Image (cartoon, rainbow, N blue to C red; front, side, top):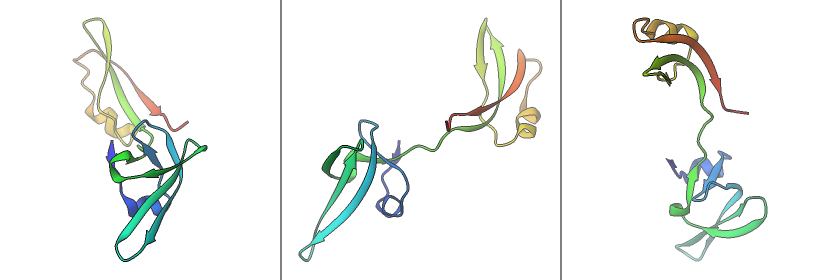
Length: 107
């Protein structure tokens, strides 16, 4: 998981806790000369005190093109490429190539 970044979180980038629940609101409270606390709403229902070790930046959705191959009777995928043309340029027709597909898990 991507390390928590307070600046990005306060700017509105999505954050999750160590259990994968979305932190829908996050606020940094400062009090005194050097004390501060992170307070967040987790899973749209719990107000909790958080620390950097409890939080992670939410992973970006996977989106791109991949080549599908067969190997020993199983389907395998290549790396994910940003364009269909890049994926097609990288395919290996001698290695059980089946087809090139678009992957989008943002939904």
